[in-house]
Amino acid sequence: MILIFLGPPGAGKGTQAKCIAKEFNIPHLSTGDILRFQLENNNEQTKQIKKNMDSGQLVTDEILNSIISNRICQKDCNNGFILDGYPRTINQAIFLEDQLKKNSLNIDYIFEISIEDTIVISRINNRAVIEKRVDDSDVTIKTRLFKYYEDTKPVSNFYQKKYGLIYKTIDGNQKIEELNSKLLKLLKKHWFWLIIIYLLLTSAL
Ligand code: AMP
Image (cartoon, rainbow, N blue to C red; front, side):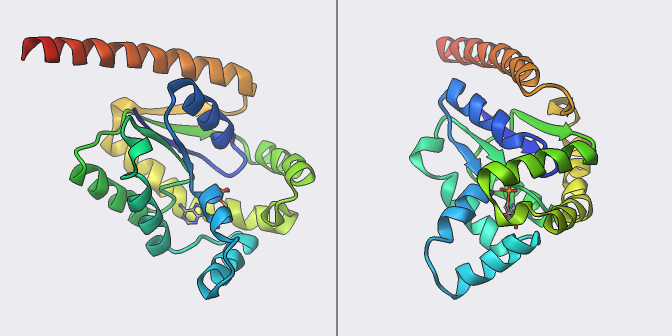
C-alpha cells in the first residue's frame, strides 16, 4: 500500500503516518526525519542542508529526489510505504511519478490534511517546547508556511487533478484520535478489497 500525506507543517501528517505505518507494518518515510538524521554527518553538503532547514527554506529537489529514489527501492518498502513531507514541489511530484512508473507501483491514497493556519501555529509552538526544533521558532514557522503555500500547495492541485478518486481532503481541525480512527477504517476496508482482488486474480491463473 502506498500512501502520500500532504498538508502544511504541523498539520499532523507525521502522527497519522506513524500510526498507520505501525498498523499495516509498512515504513513511514518522513523526509524531514531522514534529513535530520543525515545532519549527524558534518560536511559541506549537510552544512547547507542544515542552513536551509533551520531557516524554514526547502532543501534542493536534487537531494530529496535522490533520497527517495534510493529509499523506496529498499526491501522493507516491498509491501508499500507512507510518504510524509515528500513530494513538496512540483518537480519532486513529477520525479516521483516517474519512479513509481519505473517500479510498476501505484499510489493507493493521497491524503491532504487541511487545517487553519492559526491552529498550525499553535501546534508548532507547543511542539517547539517539547522537541526543541530550531525550525519551530516564530519567524521560521512563517517562512515554512509561506513555502508551503508557494511550493507545496500546487502539488496538491496537481494530484487532485490527476488522481481525483484516490485524493482525499481531510479535516485536520478535528481531534488526532478521531481522524486516526477514520483513516484506519477507510484503509482497512481498502486493504480487505485489495486482498480479495489479489486472491481472485491468483486463483484465476
Ligand atoms: P518536516 O520535518 O517535514 O517539517 O521537514 C523539515 C524541513 O526539512 C523542511 O522545512 C525542509 O527544510 C526540509 N524538507 C523536508 N522534506 C523536504 C522536501 N520534500 N523538499 C525539500 N525540503 C524538505
